[in-house]
Amino acid sequence: MGKQMLRITVADGCTQHRIVVEGELINSSANELRIACEKARSELNNGELVIDLNDLTAINQAGENLLLELMRAGVAFRSQCAFTKHILAELARRIRKDPPESKA
Image: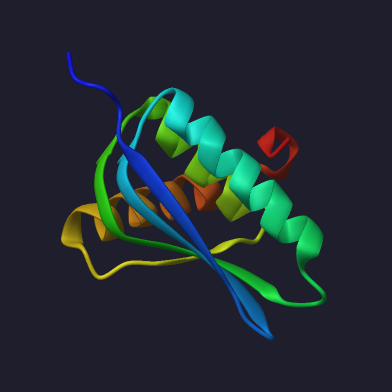
């Protein structure tokens, strides 16, 4: 099995931090994105955190769980890719269906 490949690029702007994710969001790479998001959010001054998933090529349950967690935290996502848009729509649907007490 090949090595997991994930590239994370952070672009800081005046009103928003943008994190561009390229490659596979699986297993330990999900934790790499979590760390990048925590760092970016700690540096925000009333700005918005946006994660660009246009070049995401693979995602597993660990990656989906992280995206769900970030959605619940108010992080915005951008993608033009049908694959990723479908995943984001499914995760948003799960959030709408979950009762508030399960959103720990």
